[in-house]
Length: 309
Image (cartoon, rainbow, N blue to C red; front, side, top):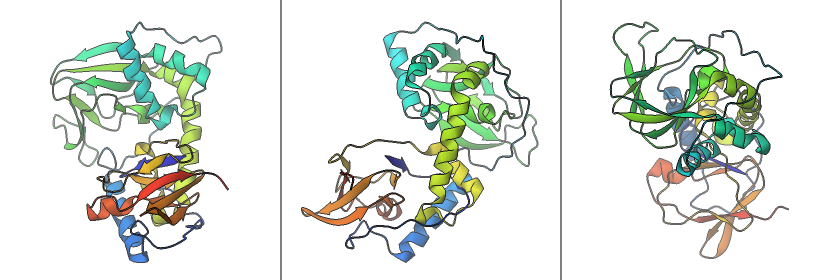
C-alpha cells in the first residue's frame, strides 16, 4: 500500500526505518534535500487543509443504540457512483466493513441544493444527531472561512480554502471529535451536496475511522522525512492522505510526467527504474516523488510496485 499526499500534518517522531538504497538516482534524496522536504511539509502543514490551527472542544458523544437501523435514501446510479468514489478516496471510510459500505452509501441524504450566499456551516455550532454532519460535494463552489483570534461576529474571518471538486468530503472533524464546527462554509455559487447525519456517522463510520486515523498517525511518525514534524502537523497530514494499493509490476510513477504527489510506502516494496535498470529500492517507511514537487520538475525515473521478498 502506498499513501500519496502532496501536503499534510504530524505526530511525535518515532524511530526511523531504513531507506533500502541500492544506488543513488535522481529520485533519491540527499540530507539537504530531506531537510528541505521536511521544511516544505512543515510549512504546508502549519496552514493545514483549512488554513489554521484548531482547538478541540468535546461535546457529548453519540450514544449507540443496538436497535438502530441506517436510513435508506433513494439515488440514481450516477449519484451512487459519486458517493462511492468520494468515500473510496477518503481515509474516513477505509476501515468500514465491506458489508456495511452499501448501507453507508444508502444513508447519504440529498441532493441538498443550497443557493449562493448560504452559510452551510457556521463556526462554533454544534452538530445535532439528526443534522447533516458530513458533506460530499456534487457541484458548485464553497468557500471556507476561519475567524480571527477565535472571535465570531458578522465578519466571516479569513478565507482559507475553497471546495470546488465533485466528490470532495468535508465536515468530518466535528463528528470525529464530537466538537463544534471549526470553520464557516459559505456557498460561493449555487451548490449541490449529499449529506450524512451525525447519528449514522457515529454508528457506521466513527469507530473505524478513528482506528484508521491512529494507524496512519503512527505510520507517519515513523517516516524519515516527517520526523521533524510535531503532533499537530502530523494530524493535519492525515486529513489529506489517500491510501492506494498497487499490484507487483504496476507502475506508480511515470518518468517525464508532472509531479503532483509525494508517496509514502506503508506496505510492500517498490523500485525506481532508469534506462531499464533498477537504481533504487524502497521498503516500508520509504518515501519517493518529493523532488519533482520541490523542484517543480518532471518525474526523473519510473517507479514500480515490486514483488514482496
